Image (cartoon, rainbow, N blue to C red; front, side):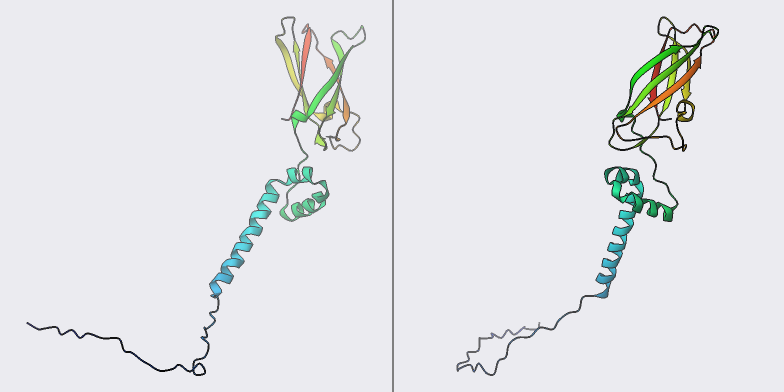
Length: 193
């Protein structure tokens, strides 16, 4: 059996005076940041730009509505990406203000002209909606229904851009030949197909 000899170590006492001139200030070596952190920062900034580009692409219509002054920049952006800024279509901000039905001449039985005033209550321009006209009988049951495009009801259009301005009204005119359906009433609603 081997014996382990333990020695007690006693603290060494040193007496004397300390000369302050002999001990200088402590210095630390400066560590250089690793290059990987700069590369990581570059990739984070690059990903941030990509994310911002995606947000602009997805919400380009909303951005053009909320900040009309940036629309030219959005159009340049879309030229690069081969996209378009769609015209807003918020049907809840459109309404039919009035409808006037005028009967045709006596020799044109069943022909009526329907004139509707459509109002855009938005603070921005919108695409014209389609009109769904349903002819009904005396019990308000549908007899026939048809959807009319802006090209069919908005003959006053000059440049074929079917847009209704902000806080503006347009006049929609439909000439309807109900034939021998014996229609008693109608329903007219706005919609975006």
